[in-house]
Length: 257
Image 1 (tube, one colour):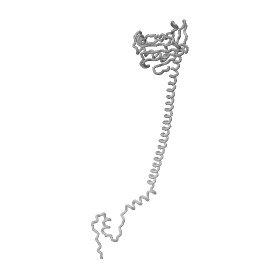
Image 2 (cartoon, helix red, strand yellow):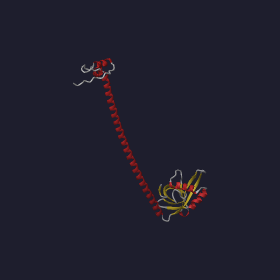
Image 3 (tube, helix red, strand yellow):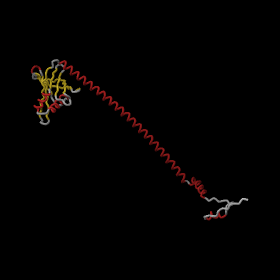
Image 4 (cartoon, one colour):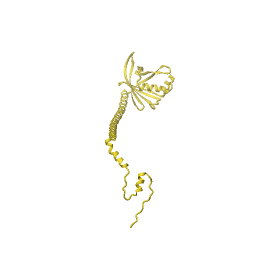
């Protein structure tokens, strides 16, 4: 199915009944929905098998009469017709029947889910005065629609390729970050292990008596009370230091001669 603005085109396998015989044919059906394809109130058909061509005008009056016969509203009728004339529906048989004056009747069945009945849609086609013009217009519509689809497809492919490239770049960046994180963690663990080994070496050296003896001797020497020299020091000062008593005597000043 090709679509352009308010027009659509569909390729159908149709059963054509002629002179008590049935032949399967391929038809291209172009539909134009007015005023818009989303909310149509009328439509027109252009049908061609490549050699012959027919047209049909589904005016608002035709649609309203069809809605009255089916006891449905106009929107329901248009929704069903638009669905069956724009998308091939499985299980739906399309028929092309010969009529007087070499005209054709195009018909198919519509299933009413509310009443569980089949409603027949009949369209009395009119032979195109110039089948070549109708066929050429239909083919031009298909080619133009195909160009639009091709452009959209190319854009989507480019967008998809761009997304793939971005995903690849992000994946490589994540791998690089993971590698750098692993290297950083290994460096931290190695530094921590080296520090732990140094602490163990220091602890073993402290527990060794031969290694700690010089430190103990130095501490003991610092803790000793230094003996004061006897000259110029009163005897009571030495006695006070030795007996751990307070000394309150003030030193005498020497007179100058």
